[in-house]
Length: 163
Image (cartoon, rainbow, N blue to C red; front, side, top):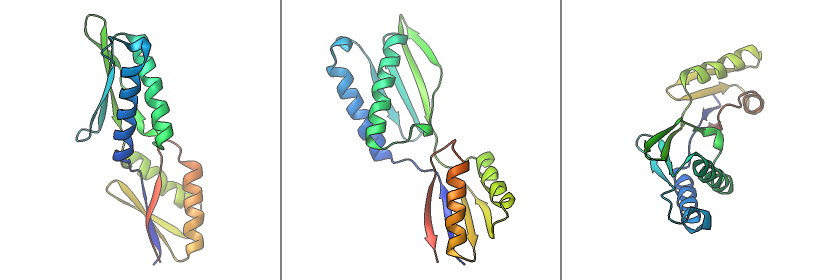
C-alpha cells in the first residue's frame, strides 16, 4: 500500500552555519565593536541563546540571524522566540526554542484534515510523524498538496514515500 510520512525536521548543519555566519558578521560590524553580542546553539536541548548589551542590540542581532537563516534555507517558522531577560547590568539574553517534529495537537489536526477531506487516504500518528497511506499515488499527491496548503504553523516535509 503506497504511503509517505509527514514530518517537520530541522537541518542542523545549515542552522549551525547560519549561526556561525551571523556571529562573524556581528563581531565585524562597527556598531557592535566592544559588544558581547552573540548567538549560541544547544542541539541537545534544541535551543538557541541570543546575548546582547541591550534590547536594541538584541533586535539587531535577531535581524542578522533571520537574514542568515533565510539565506541558508532554514525556515523561521520553526523558531519559537522566548522572552528576553536581564543577566546583569544592561546585558540581556533570550532563549529561543527550535521546534522539530509534529506535536500531538498538530498531528491530530493533520489526521482530522485528511478525514474531513473525504479523500481515500488514512492518516495515523506515529510519534512525531504522521503516516499517510492510500491505494493510489494520485490520492497521496493530492493529500500532500492539501496538507501543505492548510498547515502553515510549521515547515513540513514529506519523506519515506513508498509504492
